[in-house]
Amino acid sequence: MIDQTETAPSFFPSGWRPLRLHTLVMLRWLAVAGQAAGVLFVFWGLGFPLPIWECFALIALSAALNIGLVLRYGAQIRLSARIAALQLAFDLCQLGGLLALTGGLENPFALLLLAPVSVAATSLPQRHTFAIATLAAAIASLISVLHLPLPWYPDEALSFNRIYIIGIWVSIVCGVAFVSAYTKQVARDARQIADALAATELALSRREQLSALDGLAAAAAHELGTPLSTIALAAKEMRAEVEKGSALAEDVELIIEQSARCRAILAKLRNLGSEPADLFARAPLTDILDEVARPHEGRGKVILFYSERTAGPPPVFPRSVGLLYGLGNLIENATDFARQSVRIETAWDQQSITVSITDDGPGFAPELLARLGEPYLTSRPRDPDGADAHQPGGLGLGIFIAKTLLERTGARLDFGNAGPAGHARVNITWRRGDLEAAGE
Image (cartoon, rainbow, N blue to C red):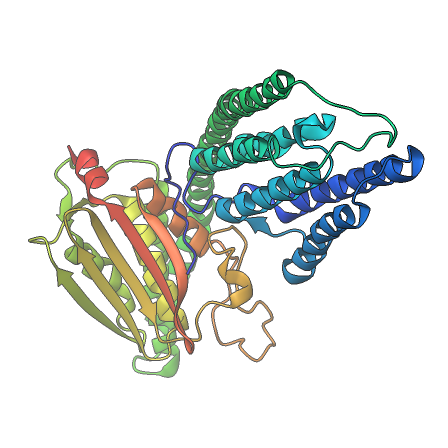
């Protein structure tokens, strides 16, 4: 089932995956190349003695981790904050090991301990950034006292004053604190601006879609009104001429009945953007579901109702056109694809209200499940000569329109299959506080 929840904590939402594996892998390859070049230059170019095999063992460990991660997961996977922090912790430990083999804080490349901290500060939550910064400070403290001599000319003695080493340690620890705090704040401010712009664009886009939907509905109702009236008039004239009780008479009655249904639908479409005229036009949810399901009960499918009442009587909804049309569209869609029955379940408590519509049909196609709710997406046949030509075709706008209209009422829709055998299910959830606020 697809979770389309949009609410989340203010800065890092639940399930936040900030980094692609590809990003960390490329940074690690860059570190591997730089470390290998530096070790070779010091050992072969300058001729300084150093434990080259131990250094290359640590470098090879980073390369092996990169290869293993890419082969196991692929480079494009997005890492959770915890896994990303573990990888940055490994990079810190590997760099600390190299520094311990090559002079500790006396090595000018000790400044690179700040690199994983800066990556964490710009992309990870605060607790992970704090853990990485603490680890960097601990490694700096450890290698300040436990390290091999700095590679230098064998015949020259090189020594650093202890106060100078303490100064380097203080500068690195201060750098870790500054980077983890200042960079985190700058990244937070930048992301807040980006999130605000994205939210504004989303709101404008949604409003544009809703306005376009109202205009499309009104235009369709206007354009279809005249030919539909002509069809109804011609059918009524045919009814006066055909023999009563004949097969042709039954077909004529069906045409008249369906044209009346079309006129009712067009009347709803004209009023999609308007509120109900009667401010007191409210009804319990169970009554609304019974109302919108009743027109589909005579289509050879059984519609079953179940209610789980855990917080008093059924909640009361405004009988808006959008709510009625959206629920009716989903029930009609379930009836079209059901083999024998459609199950409508309602549940409510003090926090939320849920309606589940489940049919016993083949279910949603897996390749369409993630895209349900997009316009022009359909699994209905369009080929009139195909094997399923007896089933109704579609433009793929039914679920899109129903989802858009129901989201206007504050609902959240989740699409999925109820089991391995299929059985399409749509869960519609309202927050009770939002519904009560809208009704005041």
